[in-house]
Structure formats: structure tokens, C-alpha cells
Image 1 (cartoon, one colour):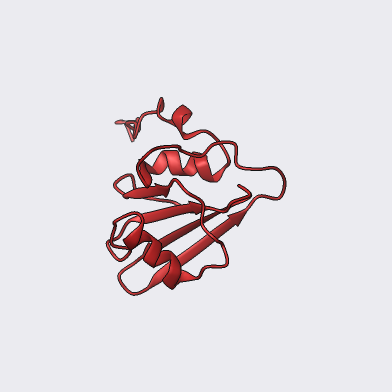
Image 2 (image 1 turned 60 degrees about the vertical axis):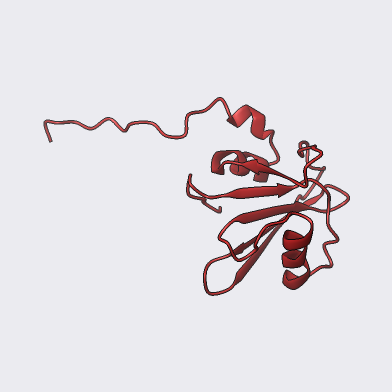
Length: 121
């Protein structure tokens, strides 16, 4: 399970990419198509044409991480559509997307909640 900080900047590419591409080619797509610096700390999310896999590209200050999830069965049920090259998600929406859900449904949940503690302890 991947965990992302609520402050993470997450950009989902609208158009699919060729999953034969490596880190350098995907970083170039971030620059040329999405207009973003791939070394800027954002998480970039891509899908393949068949909607059966997701890739995440991120830079941690020392190097790139390239993560991939391939669905065992079925296809991605949701993907954004827009005239822009990417859509911004928040961390909880990305978690829902990675579990093949609709992130719009996650928008109803709160970003955080107070944890009750027993003052008698």
C-alpha cells in the first residue's frame, strides 16, 4: 500500500501513454505535454491505452520512483476527461483511484478528523 501526504501534489494525465516507455520518456511527457517539472516533487499518474494498468512517477530528491499497478481482471472504471492535459487529485482521491474506484465519491470524505483521547489517562 502506498501512502501519500495530504499535501502531495498529484497530477493525473488525461491521455494514455505507451507503457513500454521508461522513466526518461515519461519524464519528458511530464515536461512537454503536461508542462510540469518531473523533479518538482509532484506525483504523476498515467494509464495505458487498454485501461488495465496505472503508473506513478515521482522524484524524491535523490532519484525517480516508477510504480506500476496492473489489474488482475477488468479495466479501470474511472479516468478523468478534460480539455487540459492533466487533472489534479488530492491524496485520498488517488488512493480510491488506485483501488479502481471513482475519486469523485472520495470527495465527500473529510481530509482529516480529530482523534478523541481520554483525558483521564
